[in-house]
Image 1 (cartoon, rainbow, N blue to C red):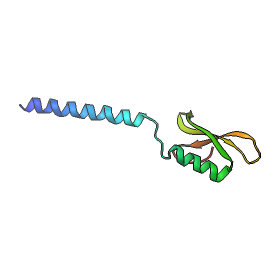
Image 2: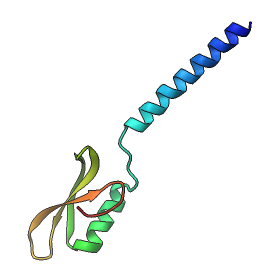
Image 3: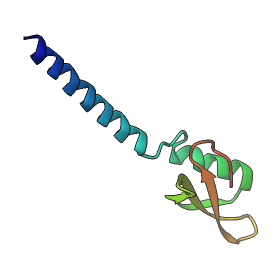
Image 4: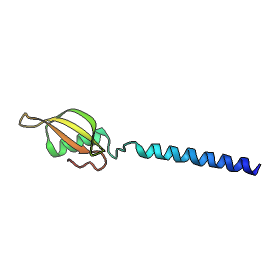
Length: 86
């Protein structure tokens, strides 16, 4: 009985470890797309055309396409963890 209990505990620990590693391996976003759009609007002005996610140096970023006040189309990178414009 004692051996069966140890085996069950070990199995649970292994599953928990695997789950934790999987969760850690997925990119994390401290800000969402709406936050990224608002950050770009506040700092750059203009109209947001599109937003998508990408990776830069293995870190998730938002790419926000904007028409500026002077009618230029630019893409602004926003760090998804900090909200900083890169």
